[in-house]
Length: 38
Image 1 (tube, helix red, strand yellow):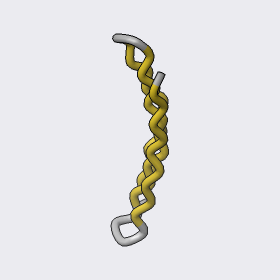
Image 2 (tube, one colour; image 1 turned 90 degrees about the vertical axis):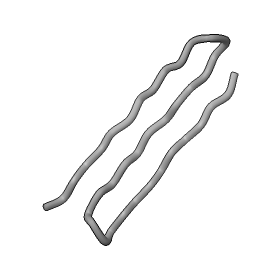
Image 3 (cartoon, rainbow, N blue to C red; image 1 turned 90 degrees about the horizontal axis):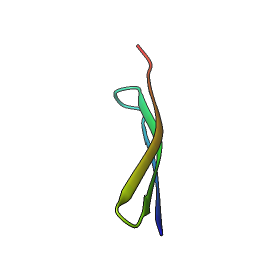
Image 4 (cartoon, one colour; image 1 turned 30 degrees about the vertical axis):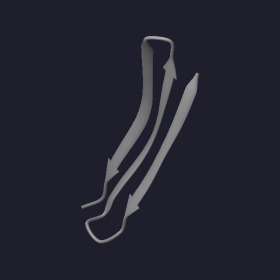
């Protein structure tokens, strides 16, 4: 099983993305949140 945690914070454009992708065998599970501040 491969677990990839994606944490990207962009203050310049005010975009924040927090996500987790889990690969198990041939199945992929993605749990993430995206927040855009205007």
